[in-house]
Length: 289
Image (cartoon, rainbow, N blue to C red; front, side):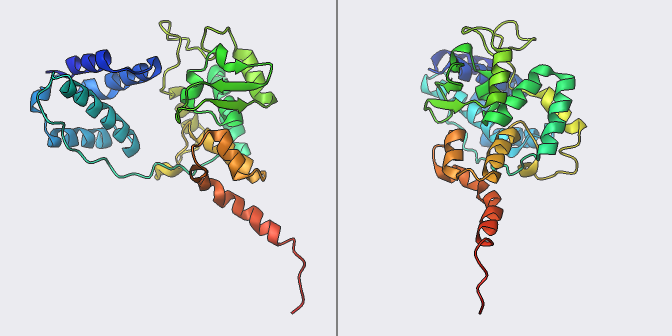
């Protein structure tokens, strides 16, 4: 059995949303099919999968966290084929790569302005997407899939009916975010941010080449080796949260705005509030010994 047949089985028998299906197809075409297209899955071994992971790390230079996501999708495809008896094998036992998924980098106001200026000169669309994320903390996947029905203009909110935590989420809009959405809003049945290249669905690609190019051009990742401090689109979400904490907003409020399932996920920003705590205790009167 070839990987093309296996992916067809996965697509046919998996009860998944259109968004998940589109993301899976993109991942399959970019990362899975090129490597596995001529290999017989009936003879697949754990060592074969480990060699592929090594290839993605060394040759494609993908982050360990990204490789783990791709591996999960690949194993899901195999398990679906095994479940419906298209493959008579045992799913390869493979260890996930060790990684710290947390990112700690956030932008200063000056860096954000520099990034937005660079994006504006290259792509007004990506400028608006980045500006919206900086003012709402929205993930790129949430922005990409946002349609007119998600935009409650009257109440200045975005309503996300399906989220990463599987809960509906209300996102308040400040004047900047509201202006961005009003500018790009085209109708309730269409994506708010449409791809000029994707005439089939209109959805933006999950790849953000323009954003990454501008980041590299202005040197935000110069001499950065640790991916936790590497600037990517998700950095904008961390920047939104970090700026709020710097302004004294309670972590519980920040957690709610980010849509975190627990406050523990927001505690990475606690170190930013540390300077505020130092300033607070310095206000106490100095007592004589």
